[in-house]
Image (cartoon, rainbow, N blue to C red):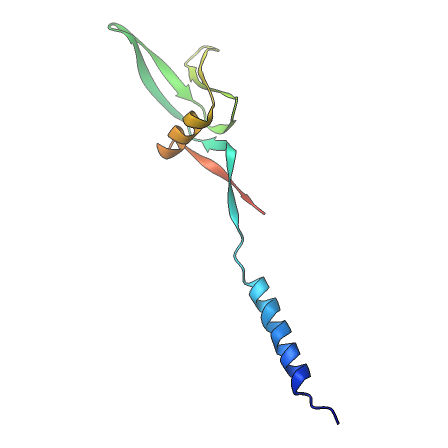
Length: 101
């Protein structure tokens, strides 16, 4: 009669392997091209006697999008690029969009 020990060991190793795979945490990846922003506005001085109000509307912004609109106009001050994306995420006005794979 064949010894059942090798079969039991293979079974235990297989179960252990399946448990390890099922316990892995999901990886969260940051989008490096798009961010989620919150409403924000500030006043920017134009010259010694005047200023404009600049608005960042809540929403999703990606590289190449227009961002920071002059209040009550269709004029935008910036186009989203890598350095601006890094700056406004580090300041807390926006955060990277996370993708759960």
